[in-house]
Image (cartoon, rainbow, N blue to C red; front, side):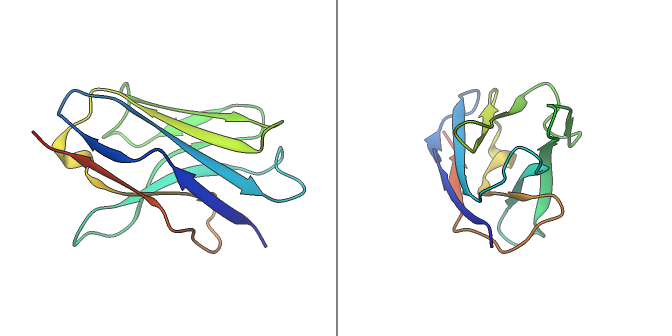
Length: 113
C-alpha cells in the first residue's frame, strides 16, 4: 500500500509560480513511475505529467513548457514546479503512481487575480 502526502498548493495570481511536493511512503520508490494528476471542478481527473525511474518525463500538452516534474529518490519525494500559471490550471492536484492506485487528499491550486 502506497501512502501519498501532497503539499505546496495555494492561491496565486496568473503568471505566478508554485512548487508542489509529494512524499511517498513505500519501501521501494526509485522504480515507481510517478505522476501528477489534477481534477478541476466538474471535470474528470487528468494526468498532468509523469516521470519514470531514470528521469524520463512526459507532459500533457496543456502544461508543456510551463510545468516541470522531478523526483528525489533518496527522499522518496516527487515535485511539480509550476510556472506561468493560468486560471485554467485551477484544480486539486494529486500525485500517484502511474497507473494510479489509492488517492491521497491532494492539494488545492487556485489561480486567480
